[in-house]
Length: 248
Image 1 (tube, rainbow, N blue to C red):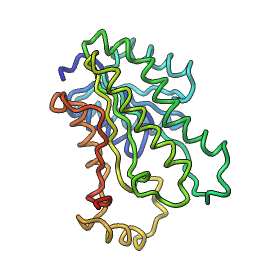
Image 2: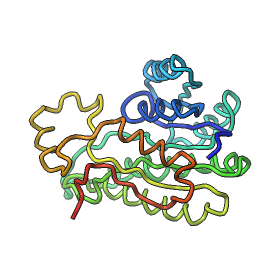
Image 3: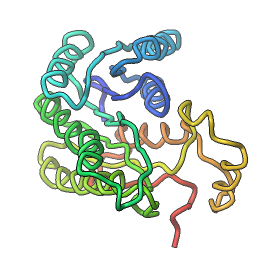
């Protein structure tokens, strides 16, 4: 896809989002680095991109708030240009709870990030994508629903809804040359996993056919492919990136 606009990565001040933002910038995309509270982290990502010769701005916004998302899209357009690629990566806490303790509030907390936020982002950016002749909407999903991880029923339900959303949008938006896909990582350790033991990581890796943990950069590479012209005939797909952990 010809780069005529901007890539917006939500939740990009650290973790997977930061790696994705840097990788898209390396491909030539001007990048809007969204954050909710970590302004310093977002500034570091922007500085990294600029040091490598790219263009980026940090944009603070709660992506579950309708007015904030609308204002963010306007801000990005005025500073960098219209948004052509959205990477919906932002997430919140994911507490593990047994089914008998999961509340409706627990479900809503997950749906806020994986259904409400993408909906707001699409509505705020679709007019610009249409004007540019096409775009990419990329959800960051998870392999957790496929693995049906115990204790994660609210998270898994919301991620399942996210996939259904993506498939429906793919059918609706193809006429506008807008593709919609889900990149679904397995467990990829990032900063928030600093307290995880080497033993736990080794136990996880032992069940992965490729025999190791994945890296944030490997997820960013797949996102970069989905954002590129090489993926122009791929839409409505969930691309699981977990070293074969869910095979069979």
